[in-house]
Amino acid sequence: MGGLMRLVVYFFQALRYWISAIRSEKWPTAEAIVTADPSSRYAALTGFTVEVPYTYRFQGELYTGLHEEPSIDGVGSKFMQRFAKGRRFLVRVNPAEPEVSIMRDRDQADGIQMRLEQIDKLQSRSLVQK
Image 1 (spheres, rainbow, N blue to C red):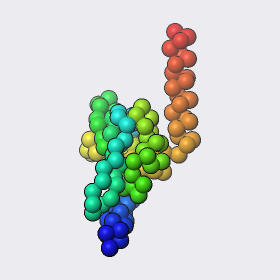
Image 2: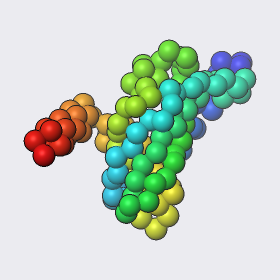
Image 3: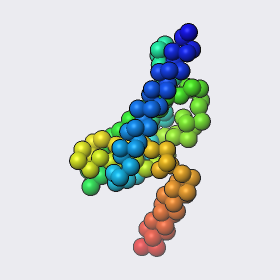
């Protein structure tokens, strides 16, 4: 029975995240940086949750965020490996409340990560040339 309850809670957590992702679709994006390695916590009712702390700038101001992701496999999950400390990714920022941000899976395509890395290389080259 406990496993079934965790599955139901996991489903509702995922549904809540999905609804938030839909609401934020038209929000502007900002580049975020993971500030510490993700951590995983376990609660008897909810199972594993992976937490990813990050910072981002919006309109010149620095903000912090914490992405919480329900996880079936917890510690060592692919999600934790994907968002290691220093990783850059995109968040959607609520323009009316810039302290509110959300990480959407759709925004995290491999092509976006490659684009961010290319921007870094171009910026590094221009600094060397100066």
